[in-house]
Length: 130
Image 1 (cartoon, rainbow, N blue to C red):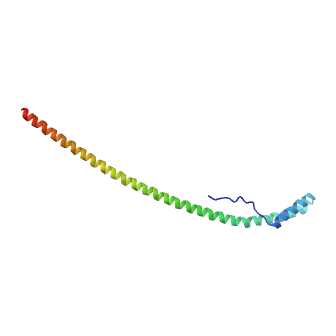
Image 2: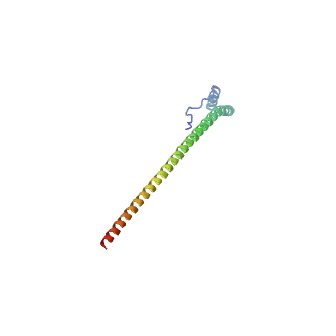
Image 3: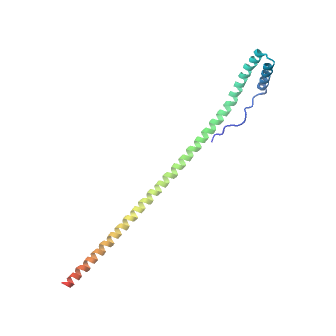
């Protein structure tokens, strides 16, 4: 699974000082200077987010690619196991069918010979009686 980093983003010292300065200017009610500092801070923060984001995005992409490769390998292995099991079951089924067919033929032959001998015995007993 792809794990998201739970670490807070670490921004540069320059950005932190800039944000602090912005808060102080707002407290002093110097809004125009605070707005200018805020815009500069936003630009710095965006650059830092992009710089750190690229590293995270590429590592996430690598993890995702590795995860997909692992899943593909597992699917291939599972498919192979299933196909092997299907083949084994098919062979077992064919062997069982051949065995049952032979058993059925043996039973039929035994019954035929039994009926033939019974018929001959009855025929000989009828001949004796006649």
